[in-house]
Image (tube, rainbow, N blue to C red; front, side):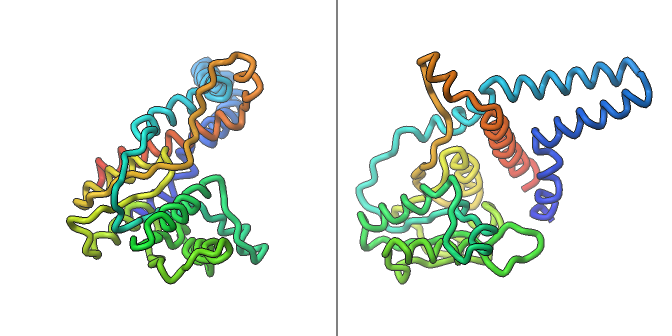
Length: 254
């Protein structure tokens, strides 16, 4: 129930979608009925949208999520490597019949790196697909194709492909005997906080290995101007709010 509810509500509570559709609906209502209260709400929505689009609010939020994972804890020995899916572009891979990754591809790259550095470690790829209607291709298929493409031995990897989201992925680990072992969790830095909160709920002792850092710190004013990106600001704000809602909803409902 939680899975389907999250997928149904996700497009609605997406901040950019919410603000844009809110502005359009309020504008239509204001044109029909010249009501001052509607006008006030319309101004509030427009102001909020401009602030989120122009100011690096999303970047600041992402930085808060990533900050505790900037310095990687030294790991002497690794027994198990768990990598969360999210690097795979299902639609493009299905259409092109090729391995297509997205901007979280560092998750898979880090898996190869740690796998080569720790030849005796077991590797678990956690990911099926997060669609409400089942697709004929999943994240494990694409990840396996990537590992094969780069020459990494896929016989070392256990592909757990019957989970649909982060909660179900991490819950699958509880079926494994990993107590008193050094267990690494690989995921994007912005996603790591939520993943660890969920893993602790399942009494899993996982060492974070964060990759794919998204927050930007730029002190030079000219460089800040060159990197100014309205769509980028909106995307980062959406990403931050999605993670925040994910953390809050998990703590409240599960």
